[in-house]
Picture 1 (spheres, rainbow, N blue to C red):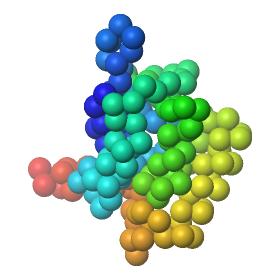
Picture 2: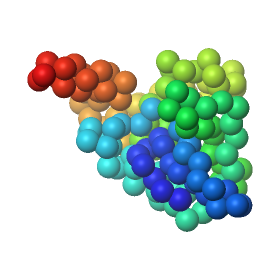
Picture 3: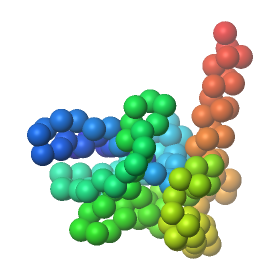
Length: 142
């Protein structure tokens, strides 16, 4: 297993084929963004070298499986949100079940209120906004 960041991993199946997984319903800080390293470490601590199950029904534009990682029945995507290591990715929440949408939103609210993880930052920047700003800066530099 390889942990790319706080919301993307590569897993091996029983035949040792690699599958890149984008964790559904969450958006973790980019690796060069505040809390990016901590988010990656958090995910690694949860699942590295463990046997996980991936529930999915789609792939994204980059060919990654978009799914929920389960370890012993525990929703690892949700654990990242609870720990304050990822946002509930509201832009794609329609892809979640109504129950998961509610649970993830509540978990983010609780982490935010408790100032856990990235919520300890005075002004945390959503990864999607961070990516847009980085892209704009690269284009301006050309």
